[in-house]
Structures are given as C-alpha cells and as structure tokens.
Length: 133
Image (tube, rainbow, N blue to C red; front, side, top):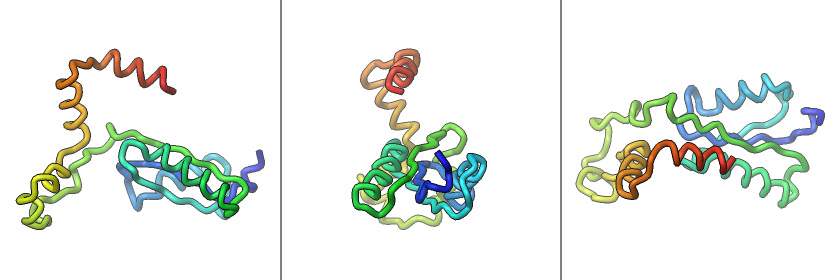
C-alpha cells in the first residue's frame, strides 16, 4: 500500500520517552510514511496497543478516515516505571488514601505479586505470550 494513503496513525506506548510521540513519529518516518500523516500516541497501561487499534477502527467506523494504522510498542523493560516520580512533589493526600497510594506501586511489582499468589512461572507465561501472538 502506498503510505501516502494512510490518514492517521495511533501507537500505544506506556512508558514514552521524549515528548511522548517521539519514538512513534520516528518509526512512522522510518517506515516511509510522509510527514503529512497525522500521529497520535495513547497510553492505556498494558493494553495500549489494543487501544491504539481500537481508536483507528473507531475513526474508520465513524467515517473520519478511510485508512489508518494502529499498533503498540510495549517495551516496559527499557524504562524505570517510577523513575520520574518524585514523592516530594506529590500531594500528602495520596499517602493518606489507601487506593490512591496503591497507584504508586509499579505494574512490575503488581505482576510479581500475581505470579506469587497464583504460583505461575516465567516459562509458562512466556509461552502464553508467544501463543497469544
């Protein structure tokens, strides 16, 4: 397909370096898409890629665009999820509210807790990931 025909691109990415759209825009240009093709980036935690695809499908269904591209670049292992969180800059109320406080727990720790609770192992989880793709 001629990349000029793509009217919008949506890329899901949880931990976005640069200005958020930097890696997605670079990938778009390296793929040969013209700089006239619009771009949006979404963050819906572990389902960002699926949200990006849904967003493009919705735009097509609504008649906003005819051709779009959606996908994801979840590579959370490349960034420290809590690296940009400075507890000194947060409201004291966060630490006093049980559910708000839990939002500060990185998903990596959450996944380790789930693995321990349900007796899962890395080999089986990696195989499930391969099978699901």
